[in-house]
Image (cartoon, rainbow, N blue to C red; front, side, top):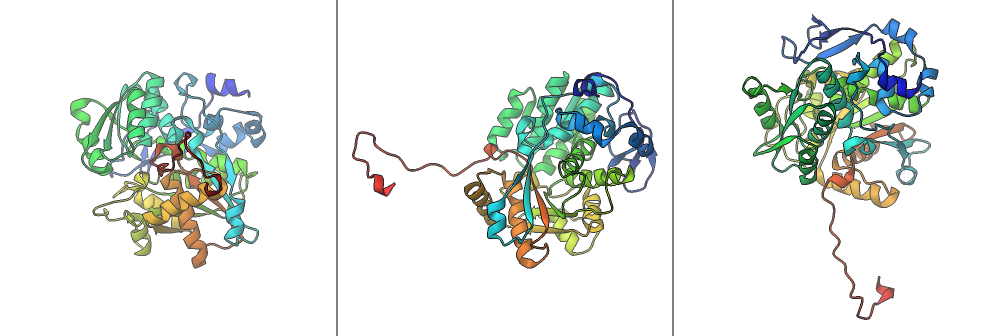
Length: 416
């Protein structure tokens, strides 16, 4: 099927129901849902047998463009008129051979999945495109979201594209460029003197009075469906084999949960063998609730007090899907690891200087974590490792240029 048909023609969709991720209780599809009655995320379930008969790897390969919308059969949007597109692309896998050699990877490979190439320059485009598309399909007209920056920008862009109203709340120390980007793309933007969980409380408390729908991480069912396309796309790029280890910057953890879901679905239709990557949740030592819960072998994470890190996207003191993150990490044989901000900054500078790739702080945290894990023997030198760079490094503060020259004076070229 040509790509334009995937975007403009109705396709059969294979959603059967939604399911509480904690209790397993079934919920009817094609209805507006937030959290389950148990206060836990809802997961979209599919008739995977029918899905597997309806599409093939070869059919996907014939769709040369369209980014994550190429996987329409794996997604919940039923009517093509509700597909919301801003020119999505397949994000590249970029090898770091110089750093791999320097770290003594001995045949291993370091690959960066650079999600900064998506519309609005972050992986949030995946989840919010699906959330907005399903909001449109279900008749919602007004969306609100708490954000560290990139999610708000993505929701604003896709909501405007879909003709929906949007309001965004962000910590007052969020990157200025992300807040400005969000505003110019049509959202009402409010700075909040607190963290993202404080913004989330405002969104939740205001639902009845303001009339908006809460698009917070995992508080609606469809962002995870967009994020799972990272897993499908990665598998396709690697010839339907998976890497040994995935390092993922983890705040709310939607992408990690989504990829684990994608691997299960691909396995169920016979597109993957038994091998699965070890999933590694990467956090900052200034905000590491998932790491603490992993190390204490608990199912849920306690809220992190006084969360502080330069990597705003992973400054999430409490995650509603904490148990889903921890399950994926443990089921895969992975682990959770925290690195200090100093290591994140050093990692960002090292990758930029040595490989020419500018990572965002959250993405750089994955490289910093990989270095520590390799030194500690938690990953092997021969492992094929994928690091997720979740957004463009251009959105974040960088070192200022302080050197200058006087073109009228004498220039000491030997000293330059």
